[in-house]
Amino acid sequence: MVRLITHNLLACHVKNCTSNNFPLAFKDLGDTSLPAEQPDMIDDEFLQKLHHVLLEIHVEEGSMVCPNCNHVYPISNGIPNMLLAEHEIG
Amino acid sequence: MTYRALELLNLPPDELSFLLDIGCGSGLSGEILDEEGYIWAGVDIAPSMLEVALEREVEGDLFLQDIGQGFGFRPGSFDGAISISVLQWLLNAETSHPTSSPPHRLSRFFTTLHSALRNPSRAVFQFYPSSDDQIQLITSAAQKAGFGGGVVVDYPNSNKARKVFLVLFVGGGGGGAGHQQVPEGLQGEEREDGKVMFERRREREAKREKGGKRKGVKDKDWILKKKELYRQRGKEGVPRDSKFTGRKRRAVF
Image (cartoon, rainbow over all chains, first blue to last red; front, side, top):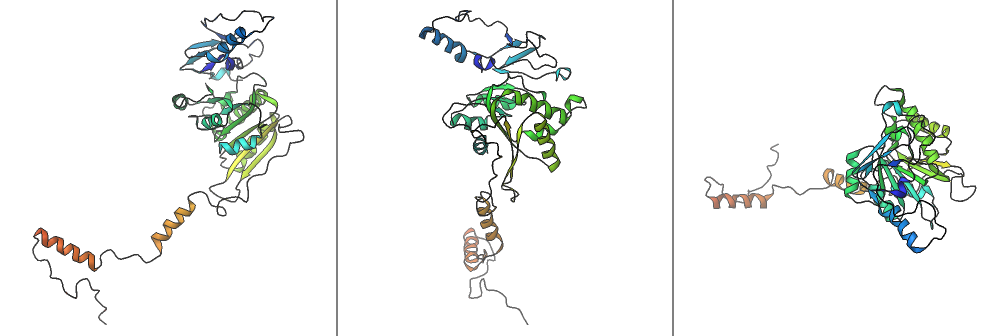
């Protein structure tokens, strides 16, 4: 259920992890249909790909890793587990 | 209740809004949000409830999250937040760890929520406080986090229909400039002055139980029927029918 457009809103909320805590990196997400740079011309083909990536990709199983503190948020059954351990609560 | 919460949110009617459902549980309010055409994301702490929500195939994205630990949403993500019957759970301390104390959890919750909401926007929480102190604690925590707003009580004079809503504003509160006033609680339009749904039915049933002349069950017809039945079954010693059958014995003196 984690659509990439929602993933775009998520940041790490571990204590003292305030900088460079976004975006949470996915492990093994193999979709490279989008170019790395923003293209100059926005045509229909590009928009369709963008729509597919943002709204139609649902991550069911996997994990997200904070690039700063390396906290791993596991995703199971399409629901990311955002719970923290006691020492990580800010 | 979700409808009332949405009404209190006072969102612009002709725009798409992205809402946060705090404590979405099994997706009950989520279904209503779907119906009303909102896009939403839900958080809950109970994995079992989230599974039920998955089975219902609600539209929103779901997160397993303890709201007392704060949200990991980026600033300005949501156009509004609703939460139905959740806030009172933040008042329980599960462990003795300092981060588990209710004031800490409340402030963490409100500060992270405040930053996750767009400016201006609103958040509406329906909850069941067990005392006025709890309302006080919650509102002061919300104010410290930078929220404006206050408590709206629907049907304050009714025991059952009474609902407490906490309406919080980020910035101007949305719904047009100068709209900072806390909305009025519902007062007059209660069903049948202060009664909840089904109250009338219960009353009717109570009346039927108590007063009113009930027809006696063991009247003459019933006795005759029984006797006839016994005779058919061949029971011995069934008294004959007479003009005295089923008559009351009068008081002797």
